[in-house]
Image (cartoon, rainbow, N blue to C red):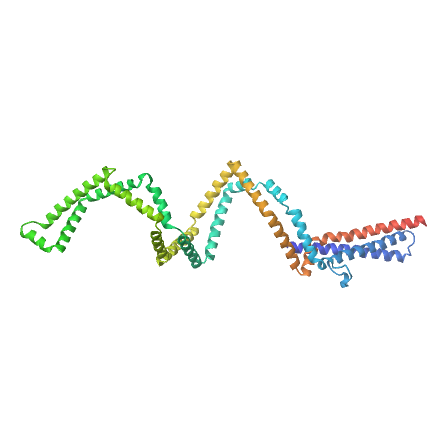
Length: 426
């Protein structure tokens, strides 16, 4: 619509300038029909000079875009003939005049983006809009995501990172930290307590008695038969044996738990220390762990696990963005509100954001300026001559028609002045 309006305005100005030329021609013809008598000599001088000025300026304006009357006169059709040079000069002009680093930084300072962002996000309708746009963007992203490629990428990334990870040394370092100051003894204490509590349970004692009798019956059937022969009940004997076993075990667990210097504690310390040191220094042991790690990474269960995680995440995300009370939407709105509040109440944060934007702009400005300049030059050079002439003429052609109008009027005025000098001299 805007292009059409410009074309109409250009056409009107061309007709207006042409009408003035025709009017000057009519005046000239009328004056000559009166044989330049009296005042007609002045009219003739005005009309003659006006026609010369109008035609000269018409030639100049037309020559800028095309050959006048289609005649290939030298130094006409200036714009299409010099398209490459015009494109380069235009690009340099825009780059140097509009995209200077100092000018861009000054605009950022005047715009104060952090404050404007704070005010914009503080409006509930804007934070709601941001939430809706985020949900829409995620929905569109899901429709373009290639699940199989993503799953393969996730699996390959996990396997590659895990393959390069020194599991043995890392485990050794972690265990070394966890066991410093004999903190591992707390774990032993807790284990002893749990074991004692487990042995105290009646069902555990019954289970042990049953297992003792069952194993004895399987391993020593004759012995069990002899017990029955002498009048002893194997089940009662098993229960008594289990109860004694529990008492003995509990007593042993109590002894270990109450004595910080118990030999079992010292043995536990030594075993942990040997294991940690082995993890750190034993290359053979580390190689075995690494081999097991590689075998585990190649198992299909790992790939199935990664695929399952991705499927669950995509399924949850897809279901969430379809809900009217989307958790993602709610979270984005809440984060926008919190961020707006933080920006509004913290001048230092606003200054920091503005400063980072200025620094980023300073770093990007040279490359950005050159990139835009090259883009402008390349775009103009790619235009065909007809497109270049049409676009430029539509945007500045109407103003150029005023040159023709002024040429007609100024030429006529000069003609009167020359006639006046001629009369005065004669």
